[in-house]
Length: 113
Length: 110
Image 1 (cartoon, rainbow over the protein chains, first blue to last red):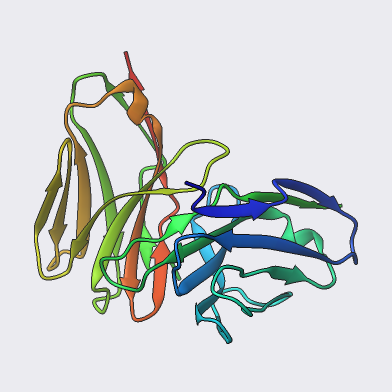
Image 2: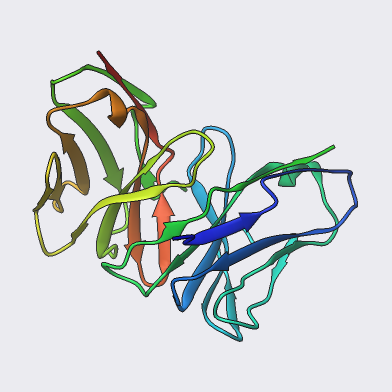
């Protein structure tokens, strides 16, 4: 019963490097999300998708890109890593809005040095 | 601009007693409110929710109360157990966005 799977769990990047955080879900959810959580703060929405081929910006999209070519996968791309992007990243999925809660992966801890 | 606030960073409760976690919000357009629990090195896990048209929702030991006029909700855990020790996030949904509070660390002492 995998749910939402994120890889990698940990990563250290140098300033200016690029990487992709992977997220896949096996619940056939149409809605997927990327959040970041900074120390002592709540989760902030980076990007979300309401279905394959459809993505939209959240609260803090600058410095990130996403794509949604399949229902299962929703990768998050950092093009030019900056120290301000040091954070824990969570991917989530849900069947919709309202009373359908989001299911989260276990997160990717990313450090930019 | 924090639309969802959890003003207590931490709470310590004795096992068997009631835990009350509080949350305030500013946007009257929120239509669903949810509580998530998070253990270290894991993602948040959904706990309980309430629609804006209700004032109470109960699920076992967990009850959420909503006071729309005060823009306030609370989560009651009775009785509290050591396994309830975690970070609790309040979240509010409006339109297509879920806005999270900063979380409250609950410690249940045995």
